[in-house]
Length: 225
Figure 1 (cartoon, rainbow, N blue to C red):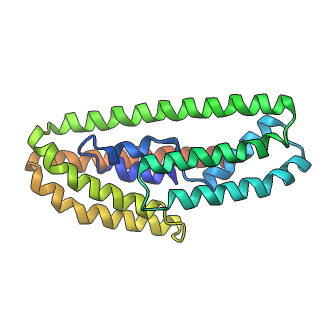
Figure 2 (cartoon, rainbow, N blue to C red):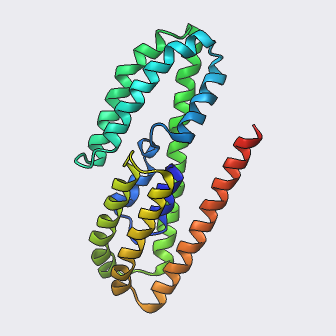
């Protein structure tokens, strides 16, 4: 699901606004879902959890996940408030998780979490580079950036609201995000020159194609396992 949000945001990139940078955050990786389950499975294998440990951890992880989803889907919270609340939830549940692990597993667990945080930071850096590259390719003037900022922010908020709606299926979210992009396209077009708008459309298609291909490769790798 994180891929969906990144695709939606990157394909609409026209300025380096705070909303655009929200896609970088590790917290943006929504708790639960196929990707979340896969990560939990990988961690369980790396830690060498016993069946008994898995059973004890299951209700703890479920409760933690539900709390995370509530925070992530709260449209009244800012990005910083969500990050702060999620950090507090992690700190609250960490002792419960560690109590079930052996000392060796706790050490591995801490190393894995550090590696995950480091990896998320690297991905965020790549996203910033892609956003900067797209902005430069369009050759936006400072005046255009200022005009586009509120449009981009409004679009980004709508995208985040859809992404955080736990009542929607993946297909429904993709459909709604597509509708949002179509809704805002004319607003972008008013600010861009004809040449810039044509470039923007081409870049969006290229970006969607690349992200879709990576998603297929990940799904293919998961099926082989």
